[in-house]
Image (cartoon, rainbow, N blue to C red; front, side, top):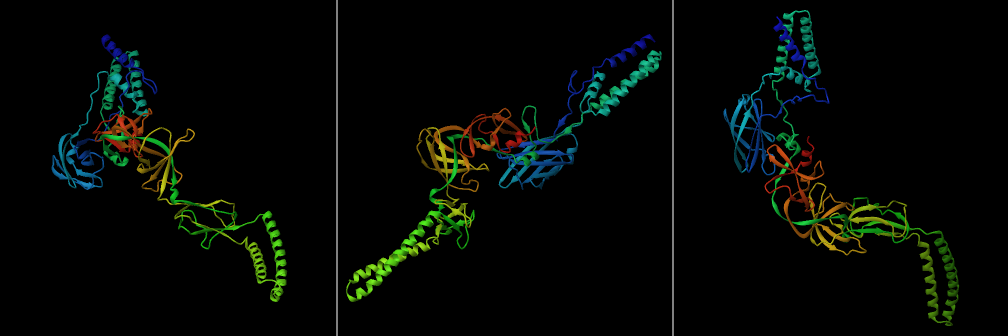
Amino acid sequence: MTHFRTGVFAALLSLISLPALSHEGHSHGDEAPPPTIVTAPRATAASTLFELVAVADDAALTIYIDRFDTNEPVTGATVSVETPAGPVTAMVDDDVYQLDARWATEPGDYELLFTVEAGADIDFLTATLSIPAPVVAPPGPDAGRDLIQLLAAPSRSEAFKMAALGGTGFLLGLAVMALRRRRILAAGVAVAVLAVMVTSSVAIAETTTPIVRDVAQRLPDGRIFAPKAAQRILAIRTVMAEEAEHRRSIEMAGRIIPDPNASGFVQTAVGGRLAPPPEGFPVLGSRVQKGQLMALVEPSLAAADQSSIRQTKAELDQEIALEERQLARYRPLAAAGTISKAQLEEAELTLQGLRDRRTALDSLPATAEPLVAPVDGIVSKANAAPGLIAETYTEVFHIIDPAKLWVEASLFINANIAGEASVAAPDGQSIPLSLIGLGFAEDGQARPVQFRIDRPTGHLQVGDRITVYAETADVATGIGVPRDAVIRGGNGENIVFLHVGPELFEPRPVRTAALDGGRVIVLAGIAAGDRVVTQGAELLNQLR
């Protein structure tokens, strides 16, 4: 009996002496491993033409096929598969292919042969689909420690922890009371029940139930796992890296200006009040033709000018009256032959000149100045309204031709521009430029450089501030990639993403130099033959 009591006490002590429970934010021993996170069973294959991923979902098989070089989905292809159930042709479902695979519900390794026919391209790909069996791990020898780790695991609910702790405490209390009252049999039963509960709880907890998370996520080593379904949503595209010689480029700040030979201003020559033509003032964005009447300027006179005019009128009226009397005296004398006819004609001409000057003064305020378009183009600026007083040399309209634009940049270094340049459009495309001329620096300032936009687009407007990438005579060897492929990493360095597997992407630090408006040269960090992500790199970098 003494030996039995000693055994019961030893069992109780082994349970009581379990490690203290860990609470949030602290660790008291080995942490419980997180729940197992796995992806759906899948088979992958790749060739020089295609890249294939087959994902098993119960009794169905979803097949994704992309171009190997560009990662562009292959649509409308004919896909035949040699399966354990025989040859089957997959059904087309938008940009994926579906296959009935009841055999995939049983665990095992299945060898599959895919035949892909996409237009003139035909390829054969082999892959192995492994369907794992559920694994149940037996309880360890240290059941008490396993129970504590189970209770401390963050994945367990508070209700489960409280119930387990309460049951354990209750059975321990019964065992202690039974020992104090010398009821050895009752204490043994309590210890046995507690041991069974611990063993059963740990066994249930250690049944491995994988959590299938077939979603894009960042792996512990920094690489990105992106299932093909996520790649479709993010529109991931790649390009095969090729090393070549490129001319180095320099960057210059510039702005868009109109072609001076295809633009013009409409200004007033005299001050006055603006009046619309019969068809009204041209509005912003309207097209006008050279010589088209755009506005009228009715001269307005200041008070001093009006006083001077009144004085001039009075003087003219007086002179006209004197000339009229003199002419009246000359006519009878000329008829009598006392004076010559030339004197009479001179008097008549003098009178007529005075009358013309008087008439001109009367009509002076009513004479309007016509403002006409100097060139064909679009009205880009309008400052006209009926009754608006415009001073002399006021700019009323500005006309430009949007199909003829220039770029004016500033060159701060001594570089030999080769003649070709480009700017980056907002959509990432490169717009070519042609060199027009290079000026001289004055007073130590930058040298002005002017370029012509060969193919103007709606993305560039007059006045826009842009960056000009001009080629020089220097040559560099590297890999040209789009500017969108190079992004800023978390530590501030430039990185690109390489497509290292059908669903795996690896960030790679790179050293770059300017190439043109749409591309950069990668001088170090990647090699020829790597698949570089050119579209969607920024989205991949945001995955956590």
